[in-house]
Length: 299
Image 1 (spheres, rainbow, N blue to C red):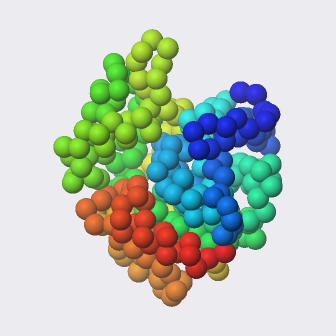
Image 2: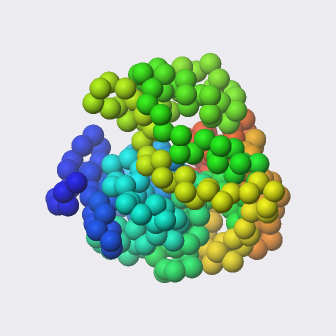
Protein backbone atom coordinates (compact mmCIF):
# COMPACT_ATOMS: atom_id res chain seq x y z
CA UNK A 1 0.00 0.00 0.00
CA UNK A 2 1.31 3.45 -0.91
CA UNK A 3 1.90 6.08 1.74
CA UNK A 4 0.63 9.45 0.64
CA UNK A 5 -2.22 11.92 0.61
CA UNK A 6 -5.50 10.97 2.34
CA UNK A 7 -8.32 9.58 0.24
CA UNK A 8 -11.83 10.92 0.97
CA UNK A 9 -14.56 8.28 1.12
CA UNK A 10 -18.06 8.15 2.62
CA UNK A 11 -17.76 10.50 5.58
CA UNK A 12 -14.14 9.79 6.41
CA UNK A 13 -10.69 10.05 4.88
CA UNK A 14 -8.52 6.99 4.45
CA UNK A 15 -5.08 7.49 5.96
CA UNK A 16 -2.06 5.24 5.49
CA UNK A 17 1.13 5.82 7.44
CA UNK A 18 4.37 3.86 7.81
CA UNK A 19 5.07 2.24 11.18
CA UNK A 20 8.55 2.51 12.68
CA UNK A 21 9.42 -0.81 11.01
CA UNK A 22 7.98 0.20 7.64
CA UNK A 23 4.58 -1.53 7.60
CA UNK A 24 1.54 0.21 6.12
CA UNK A 25 -0.92 1.13 8.85
CA UNK A 26 -4.44 2.13 7.79
CA UNK A 27 -6.92 4.33 9.62
CA UNK A 28 -10.25 6.00 9.01
CA UNK A 29 -10.15 9.73 9.81
CA UNK A 30 -13.57 11.26 10.49
CA UNK A 31 -13.48 15.09 10.48
CA UNK A 32 -15.36 16.85 13.28
CA UNK A 33 -18.56 18.74 12.69
CA UNK A 34 -17.43 22.30 13.33
CA UNK A 35 -16.98 23.93 15.70
CA UNK A 36 -14.70 21.45 17.44
CA UNK A 37 -15.78 20.70 20.99
CA UNK A 38 -12.85 18.69 22.32
CA UNK A 39 -9.81 16.56 21.69
CA UNK A 40 -9.82 13.87 18.99
CA UNK A 41 -11.04 10.39 19.83
CA UNK A 42 -8.95 7.36 18.86
CA UNK A 43 -10.84 4.06 18.56
CA UNK A 44 -8.93 0.80 18.95
CA UNK A 45 -10.57 -2.53 18.10
CA UNK A 46 -10.39 -6.04 19.53
CA UNK A 47 -8.16 -8.98 18.66
CA UNK A 48 -9.80 -10.19 15.45
CA UNK A 49 -11.57 -6.99 14.48
CA UNK A 50 -10.75 -3.76 12.62
CA UNK A 51 -11.76 -0.12 12.20
CA UNK A 52 -15.17 -1.08 10.82
CA UNK A 53 -16.21 -2.01 14.36
CA UNK A 54 -16.68 1.73 14.94
CA UNK A 55 -18.55 2.55 11.72
CA UNK A 56 -21.69 3.44 13.70
CA UNK A 57 -20.32 5.38 16.66
CA UNK A 58 -17.39 7.09 14.91
CA UNK A 59 -19.58 9.40 12.76
CA UNK A 60 -21.81 10.02 15.79
CA UNK A 61 -18.81 11.22 17.80
CA UNK A 62 -17.59 13.31 14.86
CA UNK A 63 -21.04 14.93 14.78
CA UNK A 64 -20.41 16.06 18.37
CA UNK A 65 -17.47 18.14 17.16
CA UNK A 66 -14.59 15.74 17.69
CA UNK A 67 -12.21 14.32 15.13
CA UNK A 68 -12.28 10.50 15.24
CA UNK A 69 -9.52 8.12 14.20
CA UNK A 70 -10.36 4.42 13.87
CA UNK A 71 -7.28 2.36 13.07
CA UNK A 72 -6.67 -1.13 11.73
CA UNK A 73 -3.94 -2.66 13.85
CA UNK A 74 -1.20 -4.42 11.90
CA UNK A 75 -2.42 -7.73 10.53
CA UNK A 76 -6.05 -6.57 10.34
CA UNK A 77 -8.24 -4.96 7.73
CA UNK A 78 -6.36 -2.72 5.32
CA UNK A 79 -3.17 -2.61 7.38
CA UNK A 80 -0.25 -4.78 6.30
CA UNK A 81 0.46 -8.17 7.76
CA UNK A 82 3.65 -8.45 9.78
CA UNK A 83 6.23 -10.92 8.43
CA UNK A 84 7.22 -11.57 12.06
CA UNK A 85 4.14 -12.76 14.01
CA UNK A 86 6.02 -12.15 17.26
CA UNK A 87 5.21 -8.48 16.72
CA UNK A 88 1.48 -9.11 17.18
CA UNK A 89 1.53 -7.91 20.80
CA UNK A 90 0.07 -4.85 22.58
CA UNK A 91 3.49 -3.23 23.12
CA UNK A 92 4.10 -3.08 19.35
CA UNK A 93 0.53 -1.98 18.65
CA UNK A 94 1.01 0.85 21.15
CA UNK A 95 4.08 2.05 19.26
CA UNK A 96 2.04 1.94 16.04
CA UNK A 97 -0.63 4.12 17.63
CA UNK A 98 1.96 6.66 18.78
CA UNK A 99 3.42 6.80 15.27
CA UNK A 100 -0.08 7.27 13.86
CA UNK A 101 -0.73 10.13 16.29
CA UNK A 102 2.55 11.78 15.34
CA UNK A 103 1.87 11.48 11.61
CA UNK A 104 -1.65 12.90 12.02
CA UNK A 105 -0.47 15.72 14.34
CA UNK A 106 -2.48 14.52 17.35
CA UNK A 107 -0.52 15.27 20.54
CA UNK A 108 -3.26 14.03 22.88
CA UNK A 109 -6.56 12.19 22.51
CA UNK A 110 -9.43 10.45 24.23
CA UNK A 111 -9.19 6.69 23.67
CA UNK A 112 -11.94 4.13 23.17
CA UNK A 113 -10.54 0.62 23.38
CA UNK A 114 -12.55 -2.55 22.90
CA UNK A 115 -11.00 -5.68 24.44
CA UNK A 116 -7.46 -5.77 22.99
CA UNK A 117 -7.85 -2.07 22.20
CA UNK A 118 -8.27 -1.44 25.91
CA UNK A 119 -5.10 -3.38 26.66
CA UNK A 120 -3.26 -1.25 24.10
CA UNK A 121 -4.62 1.85 25.82
CA UNK A 122 -3.32 0.64 29.19
CA UNK A 123 0.13 0.03 27.65
CA UNK A 124 0.05 3.55 26.18
CA UNK A 125 -0.68 4.93 29.65
CA UNK A 126 2.59 3.44 30.89
CA UNK A 127 4.82 4.53 27.99
CA UNK A 128 3.24 7.82 26.97
CA UNK A 129 0.80 8.99 29.66
CA UNK A 130 0.71 12.57 28.36
CA UNK A 131 -0.86 11.38 25.09
CA UNK A 132 -4.03 10.17 26.85
CA UNK A 133 -6.63 12.64 28.11
CA UNK A 134 -9.26 10.07 29.08
CA UNK A 135 -10.30 6.55 28.09
CA UNK A 136 -13.23 4.24 27.57
CA UNK A 137 -12.42 0.58 28.27
CA UNK A 138 -14.98 -1.61 26.53
CA UNK A 139 -15.39 -5.00 28.21
CA UNK A 140 -11.80 -5.19 29.36
CA UNK A 141 -9.81 -4.43 32.47
CA UNK A 142 -6.65 -5.33 34.36
CA UNK A 143 -7.85 -8.87 34.96
CA UNK A 144 -9.50 -11.19 32.44
CA UNK A 145 -11.46 -14.39 32.99
CA UNK A 146 -9.82 -17.63 31.89
CA UNK A 147 -13.10 -18.93 30.46
CA UNK A 148 -13.37 -16.05 28.04
CA UNK A 149 -9.72 -16.32 27.05
CA UNK A 150 -10.19 -20.05 26.42
CA UNK A 151 -13.16 -19.36 24.16
CA UNK A 152 -11.14 -16.86 22.13
CA UNK A 153 -8.18 -19.23 21.96
CA UNK A 154 -10.54 -21.84 20.54
CA UNK A 155 -11.42 -19.87 17.42
CA UNK A 156 -8.73 -17.26 16.74
CA UNK A 157 -6.56 -18.05 13.74
CA UNK A 158 -9.07 -20.35 12.03
CA UNK A 159 -9.35 -18.33 8.82
CA UNK A 160 -11.24 -20.53 6.35
CA UNK A 161 -13.01 -19.00 3.32
CA UNK A 162 -16.76 -19.50 3.08
CA UNK A 163 -19.01 -19.41 0.03
CA UNK A 164 -20.66 -16.00 0.40
CA UNK A 165 -21.79 -13.27 2.80
CA UNK A 166 -24.72 -15.30 4.08
CA UNK A 167 -22.36 -18.12 5.00
CA UNK A 168 -20.10 -15.59 6.72
CA UNK A 169 -23.07 -14.29 8.70
CA UNK A 170 -23.86 -17.82 9.86
CA UNK A 171 -20.22 -18.35 10.82
CA UNK A 172 -20.07 -15.25 13.01
CA UNK A 173 -23.42 -16.14 14.57
CA UNK A 174 -22.06 -19.58 15.49
CA UNK A 175 -19.05 -18.04 17.23
CA UNK A 176 -20.63 -14.92 18.74
CA UNK A 177 -24.28 -15.88 19.18
CA UNK A 178 -23.95 -16.46 22.91
CA UNK A 179 -22.74 -12.87 23.35
CA UNK A 180 -25.84 -11.39 21.70
CA UNK A 181 -28.70 -13.74 22.58
CA UNK A 182 -31.35 -11.09 21.98
CA UNK A 183 -30.14 -10.79 18.35
CA UNK A 184 -30.20 -14.53 17.67
CA UNK A 185 -32.81 -14.23 14.90
CA UNK A 186 -31.78 -10.79 13.62
CA UNK A 187 -30.45 -11.60 10.14
CA UNK A 188 -29.52 -7.97 9.40
CA UNK A 189 -27.44 -7.78 12.59
CA UNK A 190 -25.39 -10.85 11.68
CA UNK A 191 -24.91 -9.79 8.08
CA UNK A 192 -23.61 -6.40 9.25
CA UNK A 193 -21.38 -8.24 11.74
CA UNK A 194 -19.99 -10.37 8.90
CA UNK A 195 -19.27 -7.34 6.72
CA UNK A 196 -17.35 -5.74 9.56
CA UNK A 197 -15.21 -8.79 10.20
CA UNK A 198 -14.77 -10.41 6.76
CA UNK A 199 -13.40 -9.46 3.34
CA UNK A 200 -14.42 -10.55 -0.16
CA UNK A 201 -11.91 -12.60 -2.17
CA UNK A 202 -11.36 -12.34 -5.90
CA UNK A 203 -13.12 -15.66 -6.50
CA UNK A 204 -16.30 -14.47 -4.78
CA UNK A 205 -15.72 -16.28 -1.52
CA UNK A 206 -15.47 -14.48 1.81
CA UNK A 207 -12.96 -14.86 4.64
CA UNK A 208 -12.10 -13.30 7.99
CA UNK A 209 -10.24 -10.02 7.61
CA UNK A 210 -7.11 -10.68 9.64
CA UNK A 211 -3.78 -12.48 9.47
CA UNK A 212 -4.25 -15.92 11.08
CA UNK A 213 -0.81 -15.54 12.63
CA UNK A 214 -2.27 -13.18 15.25
CA UNK A 215 -3.20 -16.44 17.01
CA UNK A 216 0.44 -16.73 18.08
CA UNK A 217 -0.52 -14.67 21.12
CA UNK A 218 -2.44 -17.72 22.36
CA UNK A 219 0.04 -20.43 21.41
CA UNK A 220 1.11 -20.95 25.05
CA UNK A 221 -2.33 -20.35 26.53
CA UNK A 222 -3.05 -22.52 29.57
CA UNK A 223 -6.64 -22.44 30.75
CA UNK A 224 -5.59 -23.69 34.18
CA UNK A 225 -3.04 -20.93 34.72
CA UNK A 226 -4.26 -17.66 36.23
CA UNK A 227 -4.36 -14.82 33.68
CA UNK A 228 -1.81 -12.06 34.32
CA UNK A 229 -2.73 -9.20 36.63
CA UNK A 230 -2.35 -5.95 34.71
CA UNK A 231 -3.30 -3.70 37.62
CA UNK A 232 -0.08 -1.64 37.37
CA UNK A 233 -1.00 -0.76 33.78
CA UNK A 234 -4.51 0.20 34.81
CA UNK A 235 -3.18 2.35 37.65
CA UNK A 236 -1.18 4.34 35.10
CA UNK A 237 -4.36 4.88 33.09
CA UNK A 238 -6.38 5.68 36.22
CA UNK A 239 -4.67 9.04 36.65
CA UNK A 240 -7.07 10.30 33.97
CA UNK A 241 -10.88 9.91 33.61
CA UNK A 242 -11.95 6.37 32.74
CA UNK A 243 -15.30 4.92 31.70
CA UNK A 244 -15.68 1.16 32.06
CA UNK A 245 -18.26 -0.47 29.79
CA UNK A 246 -19.18 -4.07 30.59
CA UNK A 247 -21.43 -6.56 28.87
CA UNK A 248 -23.67 -8.02 31.56
CA UNK A 249 -23.14 -11.59 30.35
CA UNK A 250 -19.49 -11.19 29.35
CA UNK A 251 -17.35 -14.29 29.88
CA UNK A 252 -14.14 -12.26 29.71
CA UNK A 253 -14.73 -9.29 32.00
CA UNK A 254 -16.49 -9.86 35.31
CA UNK A 255 -18.25 -7.63 37.83
CA UNK A 256 -15.54 -8.50 40.33
CA UNK A 257 -12.95 -6.87 38.07
CA UNK A 258 -15.04 -3.70 37.84
CA UNK A 259 -15.12 -3.66 41.66
CA UNK A 260 -11.33 -4.10 41.70
CA UNK A 261 -10.95 -1.21 39.24
CA UNK A 262 -13.13 0.97 41.45
CA UNK A 263 -10.87 0.17 44.42
CA UNK A 264 -7.92 1.44 42.39
CA UNK A 265 -9.91 4.38 40.98
CA UNK A 266 -12.85 5.43 43.20
CA UNK A 267 -14.12 7.96 40.63
CA UNK A 268 -14.37 5.33 37.89
CA UNK A 269 -17.37 5.80 35.61
CA UNK A 270 -19.17 2.54 34.84
CA UNK A 271 -22.03 1.19 32.76
CA UNK A 272 -23.37 -2.32 32.27
CA UNK A 273 -25.03 -3.28 29.00
CA UNK A 274 -27.79 -5.78 29.72
CA UNK A 275 -28.25 -8.84 27.53
CA UNK A 276 -24.84 -8.49 25.87
CA UNK A 277 -21.63 -10.47 26.33
CA UNK A 278 -18.17 -9.82 24.96
CA UNK A 279 -18.22 -7.15 23.74
CA UNK A 280 -20.80 -4.38 23.51
CA UNK A 281 -20.94 -2.61 20.14
CA UNK A 282 -21.21 0.72 22.02
CA UNK A 283 -24.26 1.72 20.00
CA UNK A 284 -26.59 0.06 22.54
CA UNK A 285 -28.67 2.84 24.16
CA UNK A 286 -27.17 2.49 27.64
CA UNK A 287 -23.60 2.26 26.30
CA UNK A 288 -24.00 5.19 23.91
CA UNK A 289 -25.63 7.36 26.59
CA UNK A 290 -22.71 6.61 28.92
CA UNK A 291 -20.17 7.46 26.21
CA UNK A 292 -22.04 10.71 25.47
CA UNK A 293 -22.07 11.72 29.13
CA UNK A 294 -18.41 10.82 29.50
CA UNK A 295 -17.27 12.78 26.46
CA UNK A 296 -19.28 15.79 27.63
CA UNK A 297 -17.16 16.09 30.76
CA UNK A 298 -13.67 15.36 29.38
CA UNK A 299 -11.38 17.51 27.23
